[in-house]
Length: 126
Image (cartoon, rainbow, N blue to C red):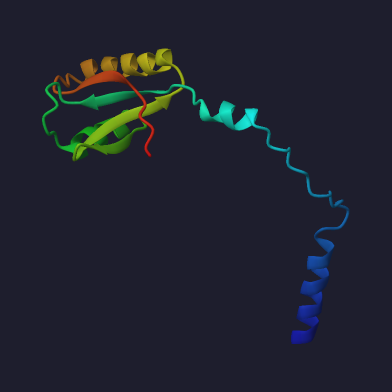
């Protein structure tokens, strides 16, 4: 019985690729000196910093829970030993400002006066 089951499995597996053609591996383009320089110039990106007005310590769980509850995607970075909450990165400053306006509107509706936001330049972690 075991041999029959194995034979059925082998036949089923060999038939899985039937009718498909196998393409030759695609060759990678040769790297010229201009390509690394072009990729080294990164496009400027923007973030929206979110936190208390005087940059004092605020319960991160409260802030991040509120952001999640209201549909904002964020990430945390540690800067000078302090956790920072950032929305983004955004490819243009206009996108970041639009997200900041949306955040400000929702903060006002929720009467959440202990939180402010600021558009900042995205810092690349090294």
